[in-house]
Amino acid sequence: MAAAFGLRYALGDVLPERNVYLLPVLSVLLAATLFGRDGGLGATLLSAVVIGWTYLPPYYSPWIADPKQAAALLLFVMIGGFISLVIDGFQAALRRLKDAHAALARTDSQRRLLLREFRHRTRNDLQSLVALLLLRARAAPSPAAQDGLREAAEHARALARVHTLLAQEAIHEDDPTLVDSRVFVEGLATELGRTHAVDGLRPVALTATAESHPLDSERAILVGLVLNECVTNALKYAFPDERPGRVQVVFIRAGADFVLSIDDDGTGTPPEDQTGAPNRARPLGTGLGTRLLRGMAAQLRGSFSRGPGEDGNGTHAELRFPAAGPGGPRP
Image (cartoon, rainbow, N blue to C red):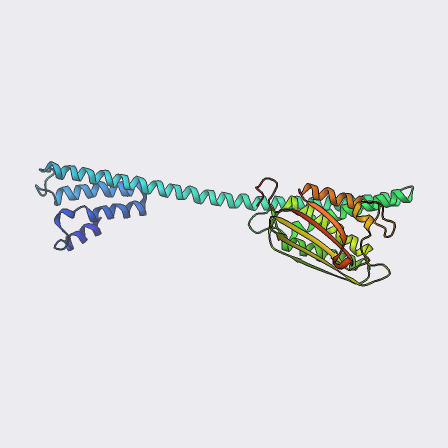
């Protein structure tokens, strides 16, 4: 206020006499911004007193002779009070917004921690289930029961592998419930290649290329299980007699759909495998894997197909499902 009225006095020859309220209004605005509502109201009342005492006739008197001047002074008081209240409301809203943002950040951090802990526990429980199934397989009374228990253990191990990757590095940076498809698909393919190399399989080049898209965790788990099943089948059955070869994994978006394809240049897929009939030429286990693949594709509202690769060589497996989530519109 002292600065505003000092400047008004210094610029008395420049500013018209009727503009006595301009600089006091600026002082009210600044006081309310710096010191809140009480500062703005105090500046308004003190400015009104100084204006009435100094600038309105009769000068240096508590009375104002001109009713229009009195009304103008009253309007100044009302405007100054309104400015103070509005600025205080803005500041209170900003404080609430800041507190809400801090609370949201804490909630998001706790959410990420709980989700990561849940995935770690799920992985550990699945690994315990794998160990139990393998233990029961050793004690099973028949070879068929042993094979069934080992196959179930392998599926549980695949699910544990997927949850391990989700818990470690595939979380989308903006939302812990989303997965970066490139990190997830390429990381899972790398892990599969490393696992089967340790298992002593013949040398097979496994490569993976994936586009980066946000994918919710529920669908990512199903995509990971399909990828695990197809790559494992290719590594186990497509290259007999220590035959070297190549397995290629690709994940892209094609129009309104996501497409996961697994290609190998192995012995190929007989026609019986495409129709679901028993395959005598190449053992594919009990057929549970194929049924699971189609069931997981149905859960994704998509389709799964497997048949001869390009030019009739090798095997081409493809999972296609809508890019839009279950609750969202189809793009």
